[in-house]
Image 1 (cartoon, rainbow, N blue to C red):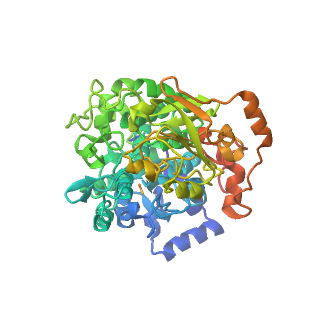
Image 2: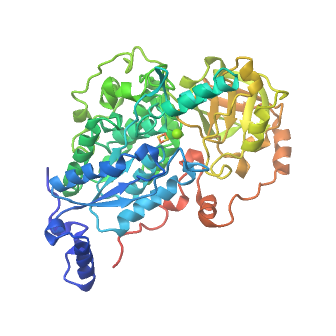
Image 3: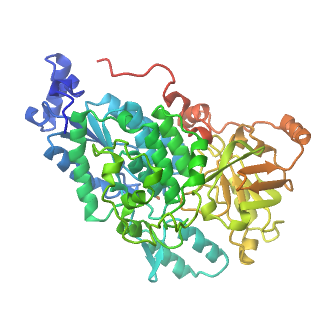
Length: 577
Ligand code: FES
Ligand code: MG
């Protein structure tokens, strides 16, 4: 370790070192908690931002795992300070955690700004917690290391493996088709989530923690370790030890999160068969880091990086536990070395190339060779056209190939409740060729861009055996979802994007190979409809939602608040007294 700082240069010394009245207060209150001056003096104070709560099943183990982090911090000569933050439970929070991602980002940034801390361990994992914590830490730019919660164990039902989300959707269709009994359904509820940890499919959680690792913000291999594995405990204490060194080295996010690091993250996301949500979060994070990453960067990577992680829903069988046993993310990265910038610095203090120099793959079916991918192009494709001038996203690796080129009539719903009611109607006028549309489900319209994008197949068609059809919305979808779902249509319909002009029966053409999506209606007719369009009533007139609706950016720009982006106004700086 190279020491680039002396103890008196520590940020926390501003609170604890001076011989003045305010510092007297800080010291006496630390002593009130039972800490002797020897325990903090001249030592890096390490914030541990913990997203544990009783409402957060994925982070249940963080309540005690934080003690392992503290053990590491103490061993390395630091002083740990746990700071609880919003836990953002994907499974319990309504209407959607995406409404609150930026709130946790602000929470993290301000916790760091206001407290006497020199570096931070970020404890997250459940979907939005990863980008949120990283957004905050990026803006604050203190040395930071990300500690992913780790995936939960495989689900089990009657000896069959169950995957988070993916199997819930799959068996729900079977239940609607009358093929699953009440008893089996309850047994599945008890078997699909068997341990603490994040969803163990390649959903948003696994995608985002892998992205955190490939950017260089975690210890090598950290993102693949199952939550219930003792390796996870040891990784946690190592993160505690390492962050203390990072403070002395002054290894900040800015030194790690270069443009090349973000390119690595995009490459890895593609090879993983990532969640569509990755796009929004990565764009937001890159913009905070001052890097200009756009949908085009995903499109470029998508054309050259194959999907090699055979993990559901893009893959056909395996889950994150299998992925870990097969060599985990370092194994996967060793297979796509040629596409990575190996010189990027990481939280370990070594380059990405050094981190994965000895990485191996132990199961060629779980982590495929690039010559034998599960999908030859990248996981995501960005489509543009008169329906989505600023782009929309599809995950071709998780949809029925016959929909990759498709023309069909629109069946439009203006809100989720009316869509939900209609799909159960046995007389609904719909065929498997229809394009189901849900609008007013974007960042402003949802509000918060909920994961409604995998619209249910109408029950009438499910009974006929239909399991996929083209669905189009300005919503997101869960990373564990699958099907011919076109998402994130930008600009969204709620603010008058072209999706707001579609009428039942209009023909829509999708061509994934050409990356286009178009509404086959003459421009003169569209102009007429545009002139007649009236903006819906705003969703919020007070509170957090009021602020949200005035400052949220569109999906193609990462859905950050405009005032949180780097370059919005003068930098905030340190608290003055
Ligand atoms: Fe927490 Fe899926 S619900 S990761
Ligand atoms: Mg999810």
